[in-house]
Image (cartoon, rainbow, N blue to C red; front, side, top):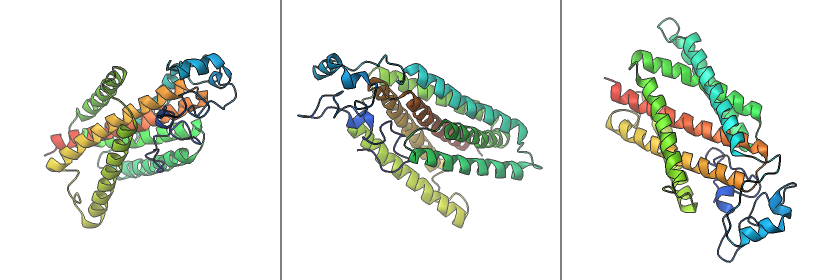
Length: 297
């Protein structure tokens, strides 16, 4: 069920055995979750589910897996710490680029050039990390810093030429979506299963393809291409983009929850941070674009 596209694969924890959040679920007549066939981490050395007969028995009788206490396994504290570090790199780089790369008439071309270059390199680093079997913290932090440079210049330009309060509104909107999805996920209002995963992936691929076609028309035909990023259509697609980002957050939360429950190695917390950072950047950009349309003349 896991997408073969590294961009849309949600940086799954289980590189060799499929997406832990869905492929590890028990099937009718199949092995119980936590057995060596159901748990993608069961065969890894040091995993208490691999050798503990009582843990196996609990899982077979439907007792949900608990976060392993063994050292070297990912915990929620690890995920929070790595995510804070990665997002911190984005924020620091964004603030520095806002201050050091002005978008006034004398410097706007230079600042835009640096921002676009940083954004392209960040995209390449994200693709490289997506293809790797293990997380590389240096790659993830470099991606975060370069993404921050891009966001800082774009945000400064929007604040200068469209509306002064748009950036703060976009940040608050992103935080609100994160908090809302987290509450809905923990309360069980959002059920992340195979059907949800398939729907989100199909919608995301369609959305990105439409935006790519619109960009091509804009580059070769001028203007805003097919009009998907301006006017009424731009507002509709901005809202759709934010909703898709919220769905990706739910997938990220499920991924983190499953990784902890099935004893993912501690280094996998960097993958969780990478995924959450990419999703939050997506949501912020969609908010910034939507608010820019609503505030533009």
